[in-house]
Amino acid sequence: MAGNTSTPADVLAGLAKDSEWLVRSNAASNLNTPVDVLAELAKDSYWAVRSNVAGNPNTPVDVLVELAKDSDRDVRMNAAGNPNTPVDVLTELAKDSEWYVRYYAARNPNTPADILTELG
Image (cartoon, one colour):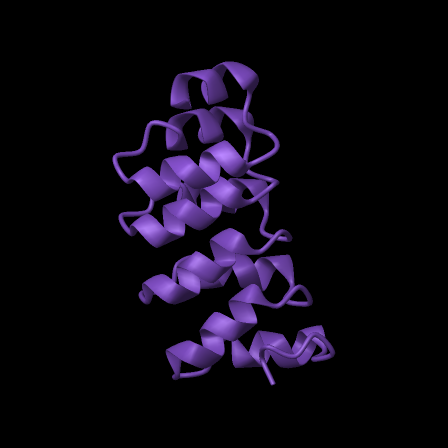
């Protein structure tokens, strides 16, 4: 239910508190999940939940900025690929030690040309 795009926002808010990480992870990726719920899910202890928040195009910019600093590379990778990640954050993610974080930053249409040149 948490992954269904027809699930109402209030139901997703409840599912975001489920004890099962997979349910929370699906709620984190759902486009109907309210932004305040996404902000709470961004603090989840399980990396997959935070990773799905980082990849959700409705995640608030301030939350993306924090997720871009996450210790988990998959979370940073999804933040690098999110079209709402600020340019200054993309610039930092383009220097990440993990190649696929840099790859996702390079694929982001908002990454500046000079950064793409450096990555090339």
